[in-house]
Amino acid sequence: MADHYEVLGVARDADTEAIKKAYRRLARELHPDVNPAPEAEEQFKLVTHAYEVLSDPVQREQYDLGPQQGFPGGFGDFSDIFSTFFNGGGGGGGRGPRSRRERGQDALIRLDVSLADVIFGVHQEVEIDTAAVCETCAGNGAQPGTEPQACDICRGSGHIQRTVRSLIGNVVTSAPCGSCRGFGTTIPHPCSACAGQGRVRARRTVPVDIPAGVDTGVRLHLPGQGEAGPGGGVNGDLYLEIRVDHDDVFNRAQDDLLCTLEISMIDAILGTTVTFPGLDGDVTVDVKPGVQSSDVLTVKDRGITRLRGSGRGDLKVGIHVLTPTKLSSKEKDALGAFAKVHKAPEPRIASFQQGIFAKLRDRFF
Image (cartoon, rainbow, N blue to C red):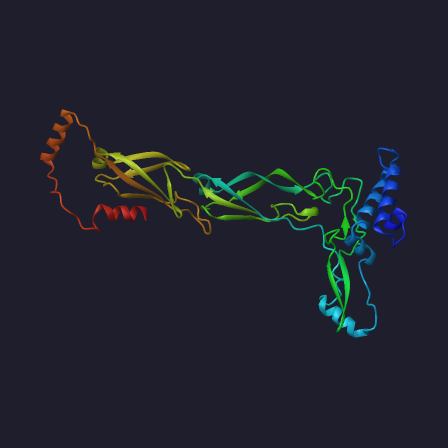
């Protein structure tokens, strides 16, 4: 790695003004607008970087110190003890730079499924918009044909150490390098596609097998399907939170399905057989003569497949008898004749356990 003082052609004790003059002189010779030679462009970049470091007092001090500083002597092993104590047992130098490759964040998206899909489960292709590895730089953040370079401030260690003399000895402090943010490397030529991040926003398709029996609020865990990590790091995980859509005909009660069947008063008296479309095919129920409103007919094994277990729940069909509100004279006469033949019981107040509310309670709860 080129020495910044040598690049600018100044002494190590040069003041700020001398550094500025040297940079201006070289910039006039090497600037791409003046010198089109390819080697002049690379040299101009070196000169500019050297000036940025040496013209900043903090960066210049860090550059002059280097990544590690020894002990100025006079305190012997006692100094080493305090250095170890205040730096976690290794003087700070053993940790090394932190990796640019980091694990990506987990992602959570909500997925709507129909009640029909819940019965047996369903396979879906889910599109997600998330961070993906940059294909241009393969995740390393550098423009193709270039590579990250060792930081010239910390010399690739990722940390800057300082020795502070005190009454009890020399204390060494260590902090992440401000120039490379602790990575130990810099990227002089960031990838134009991802701006040096190693990842870009992209839309991709994730295959998902939604198991039978899931309900609203259930979360499915897909390891490694979340966001790509910075610097080409591994993907985080993807969580899918299920929301079951409302169905206009069928409701769910745990593993059972509920629906209401409307029948005429005549069908309630005489009985009938009804076939109607279910969520997984036609359903046939036999309505016995004398069925009452709020009676519940059970169709076994036509509910939802159990999420953790075997078999299916039932289909509960609640009966609702429709009473006609408009009758012709002939219909009224026919009902009058029926009333004379069939003596109906007098209206009365029924107890709660025997009344319609008890049936409704059993039906929906």
